[in-house]
Amino acid sequence: MKKNVLLLSVLLMANIFCYSQIYVDNQGNVYDQRTSTTTTNKKQVRALPHKSSSSGFQFDPSKLSFGGNLSLQFGDYTVVGFSPQVGYDFSKYVTLGAGLGYTYYKTDYYNYDWKASYMSFNLFGRFFPIEYIVIGVQPEISRMWQTFKWNDGYEAKESKFVPSLLVGGGLRLGGMMAMIQYDVIQDKNSPYGDNLFYSVGYTFRF
Image (cartoon, rainbow, N blue to C red; front, side, top):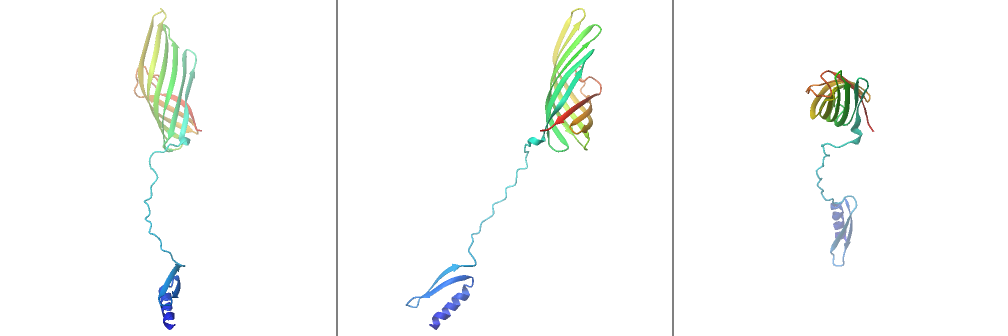
């Protein structure tokens, strides 16, 4: 009996964190059935490497902007034009986009009448170094159709592609932008002429 008690004490000390059921059979053999109560064996799980989020471009519809210019002038020199544009704000400093345009011109000189239509496609970049200042660059290609009609009945027509490159700057007040621009290519058929010109446009977002 003492031998059994001594053996029980040793087993209890060796398994201080485990609950043990100890019993001895009729032949004096000792059996130990352990049930862990305070600790469990845990498999070592290797942490998977963290997959970082993509740092590439992610389209955000809230950064889209829509706008453009409308030109109306009537009298001896008639101008009717509209040029819708769509842009995307890549940051608070940079907006890039593209647009289409159509402009109609008509004027009556003392010995002939002149009419011209321009259908154009443009890309643009606008830069905002500070809150109210805008700097713009706009390369553009236009298809021109023009007609000269002299008083004696003679008529001449011409169609061609006309390149333009507008640069300028101005003020941005909310969605409104007023800019002074200049066509640096200066093609003789440029729809923007050979002088500085101003434009006023409005941009809105959904």
